[in-house]
Length: 119
Image (cartoon, rainbow, N blue to C red; front, side, top):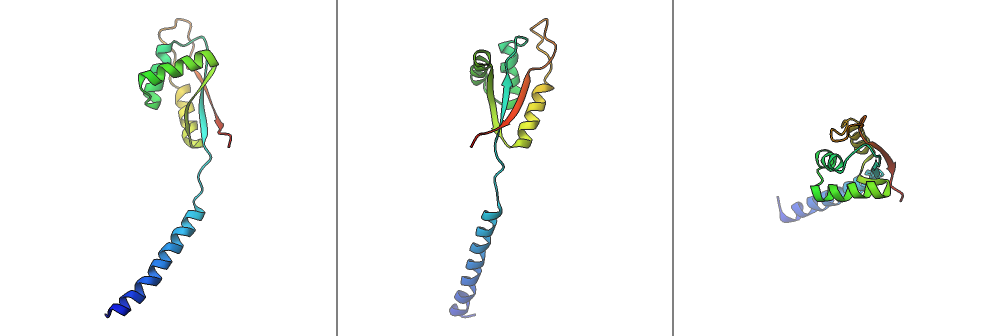
């Protein structure tokens, strides 16, 4: 095969590949993000909240403490922003986490909701 034939063959291939990438980029749409919100109550200790955030979200203890403070003082804290499906999973994991063993009157898990991020 001559150099001219190889060059002539490569150019349409590159154009086709570029066109396919552009079509794929146009078809790919990002899912809208959702916040996972943890709500305050008087039935859970800081230790419980910090442990929950470490185990379910991988937050370090320092960040867990700051989030525990925020939920305590502000009434709520955003613990994660992610896709709707993942947010629903994390909300359900919070609800299934169980009661706080350090609080005698604790009846169950903390409350969490999800909401779409305003854009």
